[in-house]
Image 1 (cartoon, helix red, strand yellow):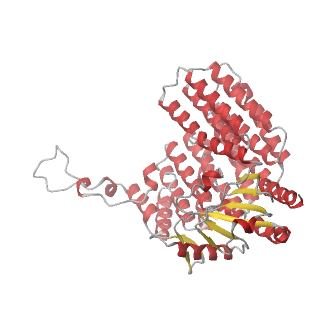
Image 2: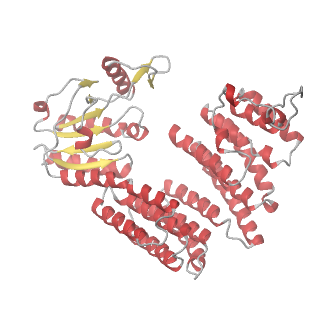
Image 3: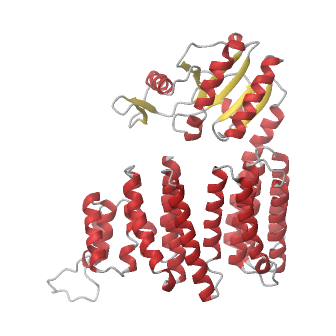
Amino acid sequence: MKIWTRGLIVLFLATLAESKCPLRADETKTETPASDDAKAKPDAQEKPDSKAQPKSQEAQDPKAELQKLLRTGPIDDAVKTLDAAIAQSPDDVEIQLQRSMLVSRFLQLKKTAEAIEQAEKLTEFQLLRAHDATPDQNVSLAMSVQMLRSLYLRENKSDEANTLTIKTLDALRTAAAKEDSDVYLPSIAQLISATAQGLALEEKYSDAEELLKNECAELKTKIDAEKVSERALQAWITLMQSRIANARRAEMATTQTLAGELDNRVLAALQKNASSPTLLSTFLSVRSAEVGRLYRDEPKAAQQLLTNTVDFVEASELKDDNAIKAAVGRLRTYESRIASALLVLEMIGKPAPELDIEAWAHGEAKSPDDLKGKVVLLDFWAVWCGPCIATFPHLKEWHEEFHDKGLEIVGITRQYGYEWNEETGRAARATEEVSLETEQKMLDKFMSHHELHHATIITPKSSEMQKQFGVTGIPHAVLIDRQGNVRMVKVGSGPTNSQALREMIEQLLAE
């Protein structure tokens, strides 16, 4: 959750910057003292005998001073100072938007209630003036609302999240109709997608699909026009990708059909506007998302799609555009993942690679002979991996239910330089290099804390075993039958993977 929340903050601040709000990208960094060479010097045209030295720009600018306090000052002082500044200038948009800094800082301090309070005050101000705000300011409103909505859902306040979304959508639709502008369409699509995701989390997949489908239909006229509205296309893509994600969660048969429709319409729009770098970048983004969806379960299809896409760009007049070259470079990052996925595919039904063991932790060491004739579940994991920890209840359950029937669960991890903090009762990255023995003790306490029953291997630092098993992400689970052959590989946590693994465990134990 910590990583997930930090990602939201970064996205939130970045969006404000792009919307020409007062925050700059460098204002999210911790300030460091300037070197002697960087200190302020008199202007070259100033008279040599001038006695007064110019003050720094930040010292002369009250808003800059406020931003500095909000970034690095005591949090209570920052709140009081900002409230006072807002009370003095309640209509100053730049000052009001500084609340986003307080949201960020409170989240870093894990004070969610205080972060929500600041986010509520910011969105209340933005909603009240949405009717006469600039398009950039209303796009910023949409991002603020997405942030607050995420915080509400984190605290199980779905009613508040839904009420907020409805208010914001009404405000944005009213502004869009008033200005007859497409500028709001991407923001509206993002909020609709967020609403659909909330429905999907409640397993209301049909309701989510109906909401997304209707919104997509509203945009088709704009994206099928001879001159494509790029913002309308962007919004439609957001909605279609949400439909695909919803179909995958619900295991609907429409996933591939929707993916095909998305690809065909974006390609058609590009062919009608072949000289548009924006549309080509959009096309590459869609293809990258599809390759990312396919590469683990259908690596051959992903490989073919990647090759076809690169060939398409090579034939384009825009192939030397720097942004296009960068997008192709991002697409090519999937090549190594596809190669690993193909390796995994080839492993199925063949003898598993040998285990490479530096040490064991949390349980008795086991030799290859100890594992012969058993169904073995190898769990590649790390203490810092949230999705890995999310699988622990399943590992515990499977050990309790199937261990006596012949299942052996073996964790596999590396030395990551963590030690156990007795005061907090948590694993923490060490400030200095730790010994293997220290890491073993940390792993024992960490796994005991999570009530796990199985032991884990620590691989040598130079081990190639993760590569031999095609590990590109964790958790990475490998099921091996009683004959020592790989029968299933699943990457990631979630109910679909856990159900598939459980069913295969039962099948292998019965063989």
